[in-house]
Image (tube, rainbow, N blue to C red):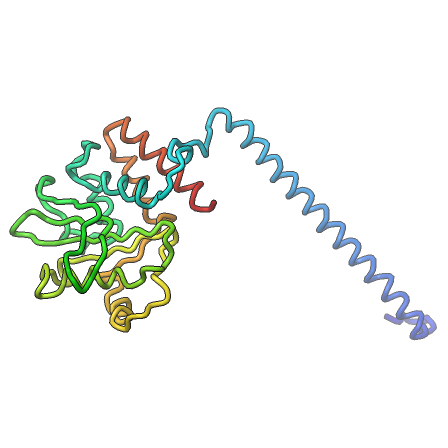
Length: 265
């Protein structure tokens, strides 16, 4: 800026002054950014050091399930353990507490009432139910049915921990097997299909057009994709709060540790 009484500077002088001023502004900004980054790094390292010092007491990532190496964790760990917790007649002794918490979380408070019996003994849980249909082959990981003749319903759970989407038509086959008039004759009112993966994604690469239509029409009503990352972890945390057995609580806590630290590995 030219002040009154000053001789106008040449363009070259003006450019040199402009460069010097903005070089200083840039240096000040860079030094401030570098200082802030160093402070952030120091804070992060302090948090890590604090966590490391407390880990001797907390052992956050220690879990018996993480130590034992399962060749096929989907079949040998996750499905059997989830099935046992969901089973109202399971050895956990909590009757249908865990099952009710699961159904209400996945289906919502209104729809869930259609899939809960008054008597905890009126359930039948089947692991690896074989499809007895010459047109459809496969095994359903977990099936939960009502034994109450006055309240017919079925819940199908397909568990895909590490299997990817190689069997993307399975869900539709299971739904068709249960809903077909010549089969088990369930309807959209009393049948739910749950697809469990690490992140809650839908099956990819859908070949069958009927299955593509199924995904579009039934999602959120009959078909529910859920995740270990959110749904199962939140459900297990609720189970811990309501579990009356310290022994069972400890087992669930161990499994929850595996999910929290194992999914990202």
